[in-house]
Structures are given as structure tokens and as C-alpha cells.
Image (cartoon, rainbow, N blue to C red; front, side, top):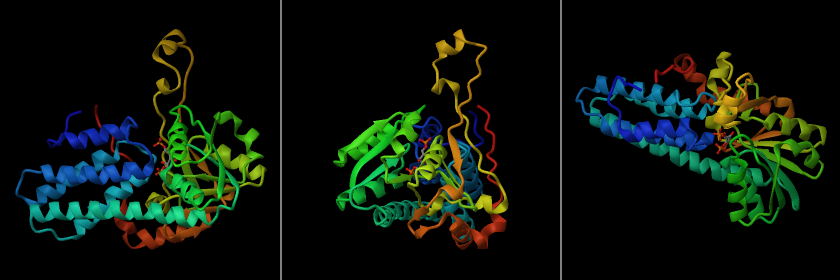
Amino acid sequence: MSHKYELPKEVIEIYEGIKNMSIRGAGKIAKHAVTALVKAAEAFKGDETRDFLKYMEYVGSYLKSARPTAVSLPNAIMYVLTKLRKASVTSVDEGKQIVASLAQDFIKRADEALKIIGELGSRRIENGDIIMTHCHSTAATSVITTAYKKGKVSVVYVKETRPAFQGLITAKTLAEEGLEVIIIPDSSVRYFMKKVDKVVVGADTVAANGAVVNKIGTSLVALAAKEARVRFYVATETFKFSPYTLLGELVPIEVRDPREIVDEEWLKENRGVKIFNPVFDVTPPEYIDAIITEKGVIPPQAALLLLIEDYGADLREIGTNTPTVWEE
Ligand code: RUB
């Protein structure tokens, strides 16, 4: 890919890592994105503040284009760049310092949020509860492990989460914490739901109406939970709430390479077969009992209030989240 500016290798590595999913999960994506902004700022060579600010905007839109669905990515970049824009920076060095301290602040808040979510969420789990989870979410894992440390969780059913099998990461993480974990095939969700007391999942994006976008298959878990009258909780930091949905934008659903489902050879042997690989889906607010955030446990319908509190004043400046298309 050719760039308008020479970008440091760490920035390109983070972009590629997000794109190829070696850096994955909405929270981790956000933290790596602000780290990439710091690396980019440090590498800037010029003396003109205006050039520095333009360069940072360029890096921000480049990083945002890595993956489309998790709003944590544009929100994290906006956290740094909006404040940088407003800071009336007078020198490049000052700009670099501001980027570093905003990124540090974002990461610190994100880490604190995970702990608070763990604590608040654990209060929703009762003694002996059997939990089901989907994909790998650090926020959901924080709730489950905190509840376990209070002696509350008996078993966790972890869906394998095809095609990328992020459930295996969750299973390993929870087992290392000492929990009893059972991996189940994705297609068995309804079969096992009758044994489950609570579902806890994460989020990539929360829309203004309280709908939650998360790894494909989440909405089927929610459907099965509703049928079985099992409580369905979403654990998420508020930086995954989408201000763009306040402006009526839809959340783009990422469609990935068919080779994540079948290999190249199979594709060649079966050229007539089309494969479609959407990797996120939307769970409507009616299927969600509560959203566990660092600002409190809220009904999904209150997402709008949190969004107005966080972004209401800046709404005119937020603009669109339509990703730039980068030539490769
Ligand atoms: C990950 C996924 C996770 C959310 C929340 O998808 O859907 O449930 O990102 O994770 P992918 P966290 O593996 O495609 O990135 O709570 O860690 O932010």
C-alpha cells in the first residue's frame, strides 16, 4: 500500500494485526489503535504544527479503515484526535506529548473500566450459576472470573465460535483461572440452553437504540436464551457505544474472506459454490436484559442517554464513520 506520508513500521504492523485479527476483540483493537497514534506521533520529523496535525489525521483515518464493525476503533482515535484538535497546540513537541498522554489516559480508563464491569457484572451472577458465553470478550471474561472468585460460578459453556474459534481463547483463559469449562459446538446452543442460568457476552458496538453488534451467532444465543427464559447480559465499556448511530448511521457488518470457512483447494474444486462470511450480527434490545458498563448496569434502551452524555456536545463535529477505502 502506498502512503502519502512515510509511516513507522509499528503503525503498519498494528494496522495489519487488526486487519488479519492477530489483534482482535474490540477493547484490544482500541488500545492498540491509540498506541499506534503515539508511535506515529513519535516518528513525525517536521517542525510545522499544522503539518503534524494533518499527518495525525491521516494516520487516524488509515487506522480506522483496518476493520469496519467495532466502533471502539474510531471512538478511540476520536478520543485522541478530537482533544488534540481542540488543544490549540503551538509546537510539534507539544502535540507529540498531548498524543502520548491522551493515549495513556485512554488505556488507563479502559483497564479500569474492565475491572468495574467485572465487579458490577459479578453482582448479577448468583451462587452456583451455570453461564454460557460466545466468542472471546475480555469484558465478559472479567464478569465471569470476578463472579467465580466470589465463589458463584459452577460451570461455563463456551461456544467454539466458528469460523475463527475465538471460543478456544475464552476456554483457555477461564480454565487457567480455575473455572470448569465445557466447549460446545455453535450449533448446540439451543440444546444446552436449558441447563444455563445466565448468558454473558461482549460487544463490538452498541447502537443508540440499545441493539448490540457482536460476533456472528450472538443473536442466536439471545434468541435461545429468550425462549428458555435465561437472562442475557452484555458486558461492554462505554467506548463501544456508537455516536454515529445517533446520527442515523447503520453499523457496517464486516464480511471476511471465504477461506476462513473452507480452504483454497476446496474453493478451486467447487468453483460454482458461493461462500459468504459475515462475522458480526445484531441482537435487538428486546433480547437483552441489561448492558453492564463501567458507568453502571443499564437497560439497553438507556444506551441513548449514555451516548448523549458522552457525545451530545460534539455531535456536529463527529461526521461520518464511512471508512476510507485504501488502495492495496
Ligand atoms: C470479537 C468479539 C468480542 C467483542 C468484545 O470479534 O466479537 O465479543 O469484540 O470483546 P473478533 P472485548 O474476534 O472478530 O475481533 O470485550 O474483548 O472488547
